Length: 223
Image (cartoon, rainbow, N blue to C red):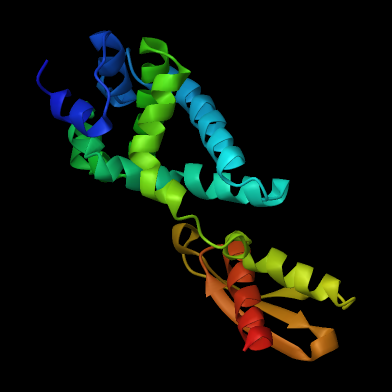
């Protein structure tokens, strides 16, 4: 079984049960024995390990800060980035359709496969082995956590800023919506009446446009 050997080296773990590794590295498009159940398990294992690491490393962090740090580390984008560093895409077995569409580079597939691999490590060994793998793969990310304030989304930051000063909450209004169903563009206005300021922004969803508009309001307030 030559295919996963280099991957195991990068992962920092050698499997005893090779069938577990094969299953973890098999996308559902490639066969009936695939990695979705292992992904389910790995997701839970990863969440527990990251939560424990943060709890021990940040004794003064609040529950809200710990939750935001965890979310920043276990989201699909971050896991896809970790998987890219491990060159996980080169090891995944997938159907010809997924290969042709570039599935081995798709962040969601890579993130799911990484969680499946972690689930396989857990079944192959134990939680301590999984913890070592997570520390190995996330090392610098766990060591250089961002300012917790930067992890709060703009809408929440703006709301908290206004509430702390006993000002009215912002108002959001959809100004326009255009484009084809699969390429919609939403333009939203955010107004803070008590400060007489407003901002507009466009994005591919109403929620993203609201976040962008709130961010522009914050730039005016904090400048």
